Amino acid sequence: MVQRTNTRRMHELRDAFFQDGLRLDGDPTTRDLASCWLCGDRIDYIAAPGTTPDSHNLDHYHPVSDFPELAEDPDNFRHAHASCNQHRGNRAPTAGGLGEPMPVWW
Image 1 (cartoon, helix red, strand yellow):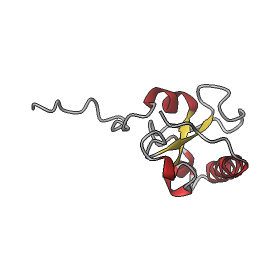
Image 2 (cartoon, one colour):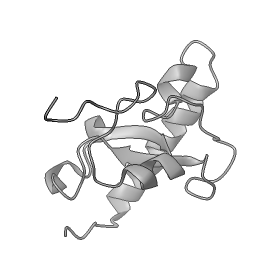
Image 3 (cartoon, one colour):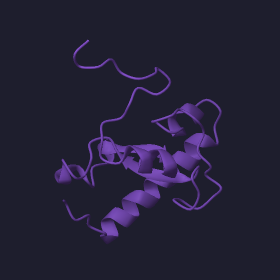
């Protein structure tokens, strides 16, 4: 298991990413870019990040456990609900709204 770093740089990146999502959510033409990338629903940017299931959480497209070198790479960041990110864990994301994937044997 990879130990996550809690550096000043990561705090700054996380705060900047949240502010970017808040800005995008405030504009109806870019609101979709600030929605949860896992379920597609709007994120509650009023609540402090990570404090409620619908609040903002920085998710990594490539899990830090598999790609620790991408932990502080903004291109790897995605806006997500705290609950969606927690539910996903370090597994690959599912295709939201499309149902269950076909079994391997199919």
